[in-house]
Length: 299
Length: 299
Image 1: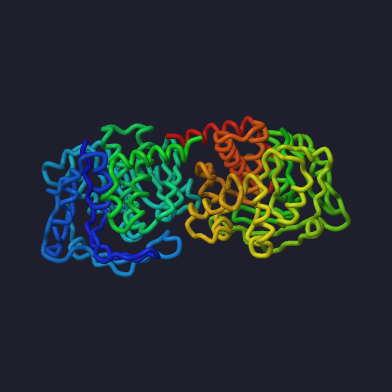
Image 2: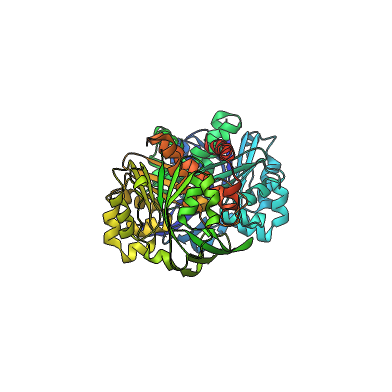
């Protein structure tokens, strides 16, 4: 089955202890699409400015990503500049230019409206809600969010959480949204806000899954070669949603396996700058890494 | 088979956001013994001062801990005072009085010298080495250590590491000893120093196992009720070594399962102050928690 992603398309300038890239292709919808397209057909909705080199998306087309939801408008494409230091756990944002993404009002093409799997990448909850109002009876909707929206758009975020099946966020965001330091209690509290499942990403420390009926945890894949963490979270979401879409249904064991695939996609993402390693990694290599991960985590 | 532990016996005064205890029973050998004695017969070697109420060890005797290696000497028992704040990841030491533990020269009773499983709790590497020189052909020796010894007794520590089968330490200690920020690379580097296995404890983020031939990772047990983290690491070691001793041999799958039992014992430990929860938790409850943990981690 297909999976729809609505999110950002960006030029990222990133510096880490292992190198730097300038104005490289990035954005949540892009990272998600690379990861998800290893598993299922992807439909992308996003916006770029007139400065965007459309040829840079040819590779995504080849991967089976349907770009009819891409809008090209007057103005400049979203730009982000960041830096990672030390153990590279947290990005230090040096500059954000929302540009055309600031006024993004996603229009879901007719052909996309009946898609069963939907991922609302990080964005204003009101904007995420307008996407939901345009899709028809989706099977499984997951949203991402960030601290900013908890602070400036909490009512809308809480409203959105009642309408989605899943929420993906990182550990600090989970603590803030739940108002609870203990991450286990925080995760359980978030499930009470509406989503059937809540996934808490902890970077190099792996991820947690909370639901009313079960909990689940995975370590990160043990990569010894983290070059650039940018996009890891969206690659995780892409592997997660892509795998579920490939199965066509959402079961307990499917969700667990999807988290493992998300973990693998995140590990592939961080091993090189921008999308370099995502581009050269095949589905067979992802599956091989998945098998190694099973060995790494089973007892 | 039996497991021998040589370590500290202490009076701990601890304050956390959830309460406080004053001069409660503690120390590495005590926490280890409570955990390990759920699985196998334990032999304890340690020292206390004349101020120590020996009746407080009656419970350990009932659990099958052989105390003939306990020395009572002139002077005061080791005292430690600490505080945990925020998410309680790291203890803030307020006061340390080594007292009789400062001059501890462990004498291994004859009856203990042929014990197959040996745990050298945190202490001066030279002291740990004197224990090794007193035991006869142990099957499996594991040592703990800390940053202090890396700084003031590095040559002795490196010498010790060539003689043990396993090393258990926390993530910051692993990074420091390996001189490497990336924890995966750090763990692999430590295996090259001699131990067949290196276990890196990451507190609420679980643990890693490194060896020349395989790697393994576990999340922490998802407790939502951490009251006092004191002793978690030694309880982990106790569950780990106790389970291996109960099996009588060391296999790849046994080591993995032992890490899971270590994880469970650590979670039991932190759910109340001092040894309160260890004392009231039965082997059946540990096994039940183990089964929940299998659900929590399998996919």
